[in-house]
Length: 166
Image (cartoon, rainbow, N blue to C red; front, top):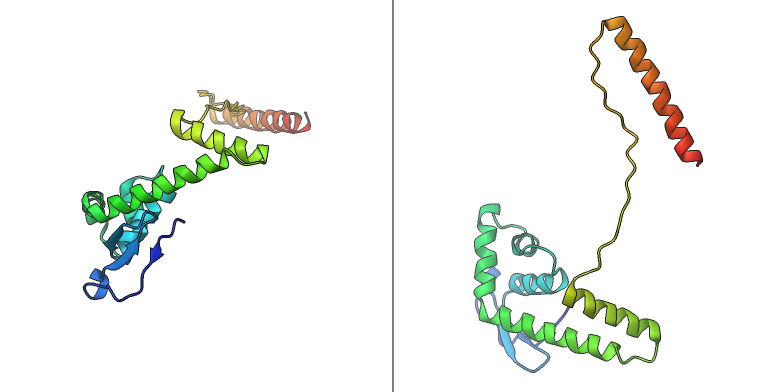
C-alpha cells in the first residue's frame, strides 16, 4: 500500500470521524484528509481494477450501501484526494522508469511488461475447457428411464476415469 509522510498532529482540524490530518506528498504539497479519505485514496491506487463503489465500501465499512456511490463521487471531486492520488501515481511511474534501467535483466523485464500492460492492456491468454457433461432428454416409461440413467452414469464414470488416466 502506498503511504505518504504524515506530519505531526499539530495541524489537525475537526473532531471525531471528521478529523482531518495533514499529509505531505512526495513533491512537498500538503493535503488535508480524514483517515477514511486517505484509506480511499490508497485503495484507489493499489486496486486500479476495482470500481469506485467497491473501494468506497472498503474505505467506509460502516457506511450504508445506498450512500456509497455518493461517497465515492464526493471523494472524486475532493481536490486534496485528487492531488494526493496524482502525486502518488507520478511517484509510481518514476519508480517503474527507474526499474527499467536496473542492472538485473529480470527486473528490467518485469518493469517493461508492467508498463506495456498498463499502456496497451494485458495480452489475452487462451484457455481450453473440456466439458464431459452430457445432457439428454428422453421420454420413456419409468423402468426404461431408470435403466438408461444407470447406463449413462456408468459410461460417465468410465469416461472420467479414462480422461484422468490419459
